[in-house]
Structure formats: C-alpha cells, structure tokens
Amino acid sequence: MADFLVEQPGTEAYPHRMDTEIVLNVKLEALDEGGFLATSCDLPGLVVQGRTRAETMELAQANARILIEVYLTEKLPLPTALRRVLKRKTKSLTLPLPITMPVAA
Image (cartoon, rainbow, N blue to C red; front, side, top):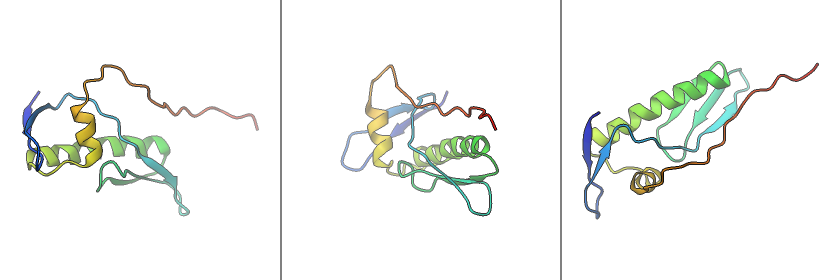
C-alpha cells in the first residue's frame, strides 16, 4: 500500500496509509424521476446517482475513495470529518448496515 504524508494547515504532518478504513455519513435520497442520489457532508464533492440503492452506494464508495486519494496526493486540506477519523486509533466500529427485507404483498 502507498504511504502519504498528510499536512494540514496549522498542524504537524502525520502519515496516512491507504488501507485505513473510514466511515462517512452518506445521505441517500430517492429521485422523483427514478433512481437515487447520494451525497455526503463529510466529504464535499461526493455526489453520485444510481438506478438502485445498492448501485448508488457502490458508486458513492468508489467515488469517495477517489476523492480522498485526490485530497491526499494533491496535499489539499482534508475535510474536518476526515481529519478526525484519521487521527483516531480506534480498533472497533459500530456501524449501521442497511438490509432490504422482502415484504408480503
């Protein structure tokens, strides 16, 4: 995995490994014309649209990874939520896991 030295204005630089897992808050909304839109206040610029919830979340995950790589390689200031997550040393996470259940008609 690639190592990056991330520098934030007004703080000391800290190393970041690309295999670090983070959790972003993503807003998923149904569109009137069909499909879904995903955005994130944690990662400005993350805006994706897909046909299904699953496809939209997959696209959001892939695009978030690309956006974060751009922040790191271009040495841009990370959004606040990412700075907090990358400084944490927590080994366990409690995450919501959405699961679609069949409903009797």
